[in-house]
Length: 511
Ligand code: BES
Ligand code: ZN
Ligand code: ZN
Image 1 (cartoon, rainbow, N blue to C red):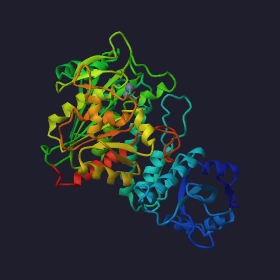
Image 2 (cartoon, rainbow, N blue to C red):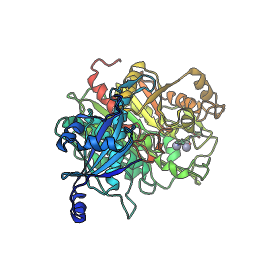
Image 3 (cartoon, helix red, strand yellow):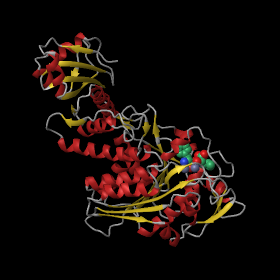
C-alpha cells in the first residue's frame, strides 16, 4: 500500500535519525481529473512542492499511478524541517454532500485520509505531525485526533504519543473546533473501552465530574442509592440490586445560555457498566463487549463535556442512571413485577432487557425540567444491530422538528442517523401483559426488537419532543469507519454535539 522513496539527499545515518525526531507532515492529494494523471495538490501541497522546487510532484509521478483514496506514499529527506512527508489520497476534489449516502463525502474523505497519514507518522515514531487542512481544517483535525486514538491505559508497552498540529496558520479556529469534537468522542471511547472493573458506576461519575471541574457554569450531582430510593425509581433499583456494586444517578447541569432559566435540552444515557444479562444470562462468548453497555451515558456525558468546552450558548441537563446488571440472589427474576417512578408497573419477563428499566425511571425524572427536547441514547437492543449494523444510529422520535436537527447534524459529522418507527403496532405488543401495565419484552419476542423496546420507552414519555437513539449497532468498530481504530467507537458523540450546537442557534424552537 505504501512505498517509501528516498530523495538523494546528503544526510548521514546519524543526522537522519535525529531528523526523524522532528516533525512529520501529512499532505492530501486529490485523485486526478486530468488525462495526464498529474497530481492535484491541495494548496498546502502546492506550497510545499514549491518549497522543494517541484520535487514532490516529480517524485509522485515517478512512483506510479495516481494515489487512490486513503492510499499513501512516504517521502523521506525532502526538506530538513519535515524529514518524513506522507502524501495521502483524498478522492475527488469536488466531493460534497452525497444524497445517497446521507453524508458529506468531502469531509469523510478528509477524515479518512488524515487519519491514515497520521498513523503512518506514528508507525515511524515521530512525535509531532503537521497536518494539511485539506480545505476543511475541522474535518482534518477530527481525522487526526480520532485516527490516532487508542486505549493504551493498561499495557506496559504503549504506542508512541503523536501530537497533531495544523500545518500553516489559516483556519486555526476550525482546527481547534475539530480537535474539541474529536476529543469528545475519544472520551466516550475511553469510557466504553475501559474494563468494567475499572469503570464502575462511581468511577464513571467521578471521571465525568473531573472533566467538568474547570467549568464554573457546570454543576455535577452524584446521587447515591438513598437518593434513587427517595425518587421511587423502582425499575432502575430492581436492576441495580442484583449487583454488589452500588448504583449512581449522575445529574449534570450545564448552564451555557445567557438566560439561566431557558428551557434546557435534556440528554439521558443508559449507563449499564456491565451487562451480564442477569438471571437471563448472556452466552459467555463476546460477553466482555458488555463493558460498553454504558455507551449511552458515555456519549451523552462526553457531548456535554464538549458543549462546555465549546461554550455553546444553551442549557443542557445530562442524566445517567449507572449500575451493573448481574445475576445473584438479589437479582430480578423473570416474571417479577416492579414499579417505575410514574407509577406504571412493569413485568420483567427477561432480565437482559434491563436498559429500558433504567431508562423508564430516568425518562420520568427528565420531565421535571420543562425540557425543550429530551434525547436519550442507549445500547438498547441487539435487534438494532441486526437492522442497520454499524451504518447509522436508529432514531425513534415523536418530533419531526427534532428529527430534522439530528439528521442535518449527522450529515455534517458523518456519524449518521436513520429514522425508525414508533407505531402503535409495537406499543400493543408491550402493553399486552399478564401481570403488569407493561412487559419489558414484546410478546412476539424477537420480531422488531428495536421497535418494541422504543415503544416500551414511549410509555414513560409525555414530552412532545423526545428522541430515543438506539446505538447498539454503532457501539464498536471493526474496520467499517476507516478513521476509527478497532474497538469501542464513541458514536454518535459528535452528532450529539453538532445537534446541540444547532439547537443553540434555533431560537424559535417548536413547543
Ligand atoms: N445491552 C443489550 C443490547 C446490546 C446487544 C447492545 C449487543 C450492544 C450489543 C441489552 O441490554 C440486551 O441484552 N437486550 C436484549 C433484549 C431482549 C432480551 C429483548 C437483546 O437485544 O437481546
Ligand atoms: Zn441486557
Ligand atoms: Zn444492556
